[in-house]
Structures are given as structure tokens and as C-alpha cells.
Amino acid sequence: MATRGAYAKGVIKREEILDAALAVVAEHGYRKASVREIADAAGLSPAGLLHYFGTKEELFVAILRARDERDARVYADAAADPVTALLDVMRHNASVPGLVQLYAQLAAEAGDPEHPAHAYFRERTATVEGASVAGIVAAQAEGTVRSDLDPAWIIRAVHALADGLQSAWMLDPSVDMAADIEQFVALLRP
Image (tube, rainbow, N blue to C red; front, side, top):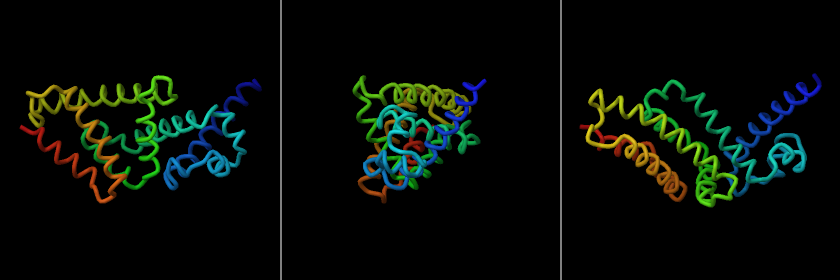
């Protein structure tokens, strides 16, 4: 019985840490968010923080997973339409530059199969693209998306465009990521 209580407390504490970490990284960015700063925000020592995550890299992967879970909850109503959901997320991303920096940095590093973020990005890509293909197939059946285009290609192209726009936006915050995606989506209409 004590193990269950300790486990439940650990899960709750981990969630508290991730909430604090999301706020710190969103505000200060990937490079300025130290383990010490995140630990302070969570009311822990750096060693206490890493007890829950192992390494700084694993903490940052957990932050991205928590961000994805939060976005899935917040934008659940739009999820039936992958384009609307993506546009909503891209508009939100403009308000959390630190999380965009974290995503872009770890995405680049995740090309190394040994990096702790490698599995996360492979899983995330498969999940996002897999879930979105059905929406494109439905839109093609309704006649709102060109039927001569491969649905998987459309999703890969939009995913790559979104990631590239986030990099461009980090260099020039005047880039309207959502507007650029809307322009691309307009090219997909019959």
C-alpha cells in the first residue's frame, strides 16, 4: 500500500515539475532555462529534479511530451480538422518562443539515434502524421482537398513547412507562421 502512495506522490510531483518547467522554458527559452532555474521553480534542488528525469536532455524531452499533451487537451475540439488544429497550435506557438526553441533544438539533435529525443520525435511524427492522414482522406472525399495528391505526402509537406516556419520565425518574429500555412493549404484546394 505504501508503494502505491509513494508512486502516486511521485507522479503528482513529476507533473508539478513539468508544469513549472513548461513555464520556465516558455518564458526564458531552451538555452537560458537551466536545471537550477527549473528546480527552483519546482521547489527542488537540481539533484532532486534530476531524480525524476535522469538527465537534462530527458527532462527536456519530458517537457515536449507535456507540451504535446497540453496542446492535445486545449485543441481537442479542432483535432477533427487537422488544418484547423495545426493553425491553432501555430498561433499559440508564437506566444511561447522558448518552447519553439526547445522543439527546434531537440529536433535537430534527435537526428542522432543515440540522443534521448530520437525516440520521442519518431513517435511524435508517426502519431501526428498518422492521425492527420485520415483527415486529409476525408477532405479529399468531400472535395475540399485535391484528390490527385497523396495524403501522406500532404501531411509530410505541411509538417516540414510548420517546422521550417518555426525556425524562420525564431530568426524573424514578424513571420506569420499560421498565415503561411494557410497559403500553402489554399494550394491544396481543387
